[in-house]
Amino acid sequence: MSRYSIDIRHLRYFIAIAEAGSFTRAANHLHIAQPALSQHVRNLEQSFGTQLLDRTARGVDLTADGRKLLAHARRVVEEMDRLVDAVSPGKPTGDVMLGLPIPVSPLITQPLLTTIQRDFGGITLHIREAMSAYLAEWLIDGRIDAAVLFSNQELPHIDTHEVCEETLYVVGPPGAFSPGETIPFHSLPRYPLIMSHPENGLRSLVHSTAQRLGVEYTIKFEIDVITEMKRFVAAGKGYTVLAPVAFYEDLVAGRLSAAPIVEPEIVRTWTMATRRHSRPNAACKAAMDLTEAVLVERTGMVKKAVSDYAGALH
Image (cartoon, rainbow, N blue to C red; front, side, top):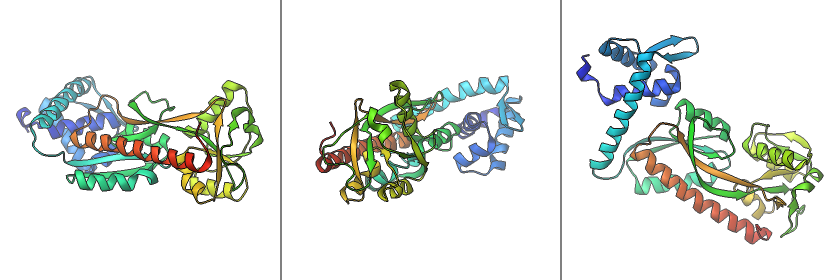
């Protein structure tokens, strides 16, 4: 391969490997075989006449020339994407890997996919569901293109912007809370809690608030599966803290009761996230914009449903 036969695909592959720090992770993200990806890098190195990557037991590291190429390659790919966006007729096309947190996925997946199919038939949307912390790792590793994330995570390699907010509730068995009832945060020790593990974003938000206010609370069980957590609560084995998206159907069906936390009110913010220094292509941007619109619409619907059923949010 001569230097003049380098195309944009080779540069995209190189960027993916550099950002993932691993041939395996990059191959999974790009949906191509690892040997083929390795061959593309060898061709690039042969074309430039220099070693671009150091292979290590942990993955790959950029050489000095590799770092130079990465900086230039990102600019070239971004300019090419802008060119395509500017002159390509019609609607965007392509595959998009989108990460959704477990509480959000059931709420928006169906309307999101339905709208994508109706309005953007050329986009194939792949949805990966996981806890927010795992989605952040996948985003950094390049295994997904964008994600909805909980805002209180420390994300040095990720760019985010806020989409919507939710008020947190103490959730209990049927009849535990009356419509319109509120729970001051200093009363939280009265409720033995069933929560996810300490790295979970919602639990860390509760914990940081408790530390700031000097409130000690009790964790009775740690359960990472929300459906099982709610089943334990419904059976009277404890309480939990959740946002309305996770419990509103159970509330309306009479399987659970809930009261908003006040003094202070605890608010969880959802964000749309992408890898830092990466520019989403037209298909990814369209999917992100639509995801934000659906998330705002559906969380607003849930907020109203909970407000109408259990009193007021404020």
